[in-house]
Image (cartoon, rainbow over all chains, first blue to last red; front, side, top):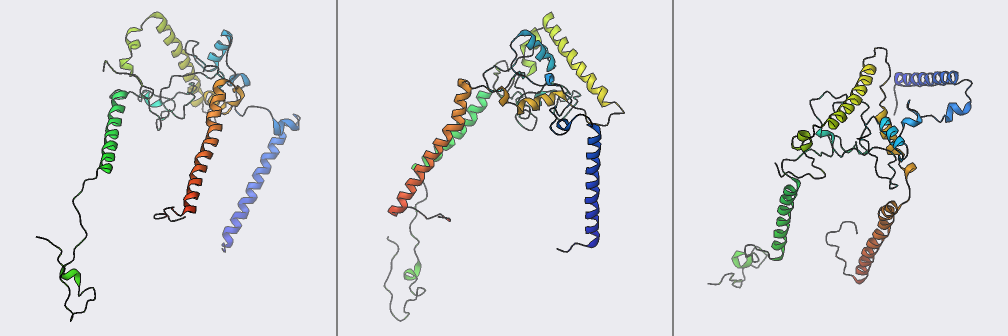
Length: 205
Length: 127
């Protein structure tokens, strides 16, 4: 495909600009970490965020001091903080929050993030991405769960049963093969007009 | 609604929660005040950062960082126990053998039918 000269020129210019930008970034980075060693520049073992290692989740807390420290870390009261049971499933000291979806929260309160109905810094549920308002909703139902599921399963089960019965015992209008007039269409089927056709009687009185 | 029963995906509304009506003891109030103090502190931190006119970067949420870190580093706290071994076997090992058995028997039956000449190809486009 032939591109116009103007497109080509602007593309090349753009690439040159990008290359210059990248070179500038490298120069600035080299200036900053001057004297800290090669290792720090490329393989720096630091968290990407500004958090220190003890502000990140750790292993399951066993002593009361660890529990208090973990509660403080997650911005929860010691009463509310309850870690997942330590059965090796990989939760560590992450708090076990009640399984309530975000659609249950007050829609009129001025949340920091209104679509997520969450405030900044609030401890997030392990399954937070499941409990957003587009997905699982745990808000109270107009009827209790047993009635609802009973009604649905009852209706669906009944319909399935009746359709099955209809397959086993079919019921339809009586049918027979189609009957054609004029001696089973003797002339239309290519019969000899001179010859007398045999009489075909498709009825019986 | 007095006979309203909770379910895993249907919670009890706050207006039907007896704790809201009866639990007005001093301990409950103190606990609520503690929670409110924590919330207010977080709100203050956020608002200060949000309304800072010299701020140029995004406000980083440590709770979000912790959540992401916890969700991505599950294996560091993994420990082989009976529960985890059973689950691993159930989800990782059993399906292999189960689906092998199912597919193999199905294909063998089809092969027998083809060899015997009884394979019904009436509605098949591909085979």
